[in-house]
Length: 468
Image (cartoon, rainbow, N blue to C red; front, top):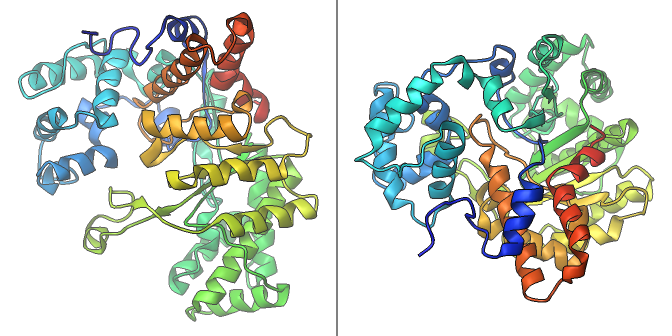
């Protein structure tokens, strides 16, 4: 019987083991999409406990705990101690067999804290105390955790109105790991609530120094902020959308829609879709002008539980995979930009695995030979950033595109303990390729090329694609 999570975890063949240990494992990490809190990096934050760094804000764990019958107060409550929350998580872990949380939990304990013990109620107290003792030392500060995992660059997720003061402070401090902003302008097209949108535009006017009274003024303000982000090293944008918006519209219609919502009148569904369609195009044109890559995370239905949304707000574990017919609108959006010569490097992240082949075939429609892998199929994300989801994404890309040009993995996380997700991905990648070699589906004589392919997917492709 194979030992749990030994050095050859997920690596089923000798070839897979060689590819991982001698090639994938040594590559630095470029985490080009994450949700780290920039202030924590700037301040070199010292975490108060394993509960804070592990359970604070982790909606993956909260969902599992709720499913296990744990009361909400031990997930998001303010009236429980760190130990009580950790204890409830430890009680839940034995019920997570075959859920990626079981693997992530023990990878993080092993790689961050050197703990090989299995977390369960009988080991909870000693693991809690050992982790807390280590977190109290400078070796486990935010920056040193990034160093521990051989991180080279991270790209955070930042709104156009963000000051980026912590990115600037981190850079000026001489910290050797790059923390770059990534432009996330979702709120600039979130016109579902007139009052909320008006408040956002007023904030945009304040930080940009542009007096906004029209649609054109708002675009001028956004362009000014886009240029500021570029000055601070930004190389890519990101958009969290339910689906691609590609309605037909005229400039006059969009100006009138802006005036209506800015004036406090709620929009019709048709007006909302037209406005979002126009904004997606304008943002894409900005990215093309500056040579950025643009990312689209699509397909989530958010805040399904209205009762808990009212109590806790967004990003608390009540989202799910959506079911949208997006192929035609995605094609129309990309084709419009391509026809005008304004389609920049693009990464498409699909959340519903039934559409993997849809996305994988969409890439080939708009590759133009200017950049290897210009249009990318993004790694399995959110509900799909686990072994099965990663394998399905890579298999679809392999069969219908070029896996060799793939820009690889990212954490998509706010936790400083999430970097083992890169290891998890790299082991999965090496296992796929190792199986192919040992099954005679890839030639052993081409091992140098396969080894290079692994190193490229783990690091080199992203470094070159984003011009880091």
